[in-house]
View 1: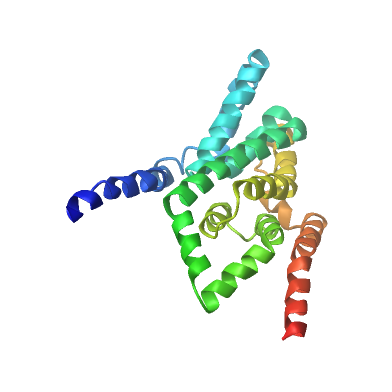
View 2: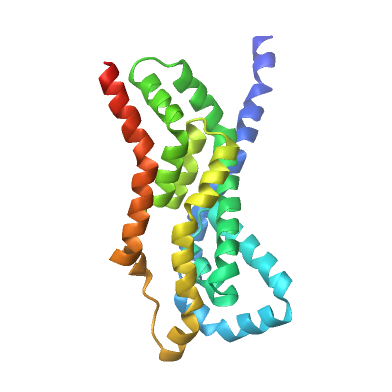
Length: 245
């Protein structure tokens, strides 16, 4: 009788983890099959066809572009940077940045939900019921969720897929994740979209875009300033905690 009551639970666990397993498999396959496809050279070679299709089917192009961006992010496929440049190339800095941020946010939400459904809820519950250091880590995250979420989005060194997975594993709400993702990626998205908006001239000169522009002082310093603002509540909370000891 015990075996009969436990069997139905096993398929349920697999069903919960199936989306995450599919994402992992597609990500691995895509890393090998798409790394030489979604490149700057491919964009340069197809630029005239893309512009012609956009001019003839603007709304359809917007929808297809956002959908493609969602898939790239949701499955952690290579080419997100090229997609951001393409958004600027096809739609200018604005509304290109809006389309880029929308696609990236929807894709991030998809992988966030898959991770939380498959692993996050159980892991968050274990952290909540844990003791010692594990419980203190969970409480620290809970006290500064907004700041932590904005910080991992603003810091250029944090990989995008990491910033999508970690919040799902510590019990962050979907609303907070979606809002902080949408707003937090705007600075970087605007920078790269503006680079994409100038690709016409870059193509004409036969050059490649400077993707290191985000690390130049005039771009990096304002972003670091935003990072400092996001980190300020965390620092203040830590200082108050030390004073209370």
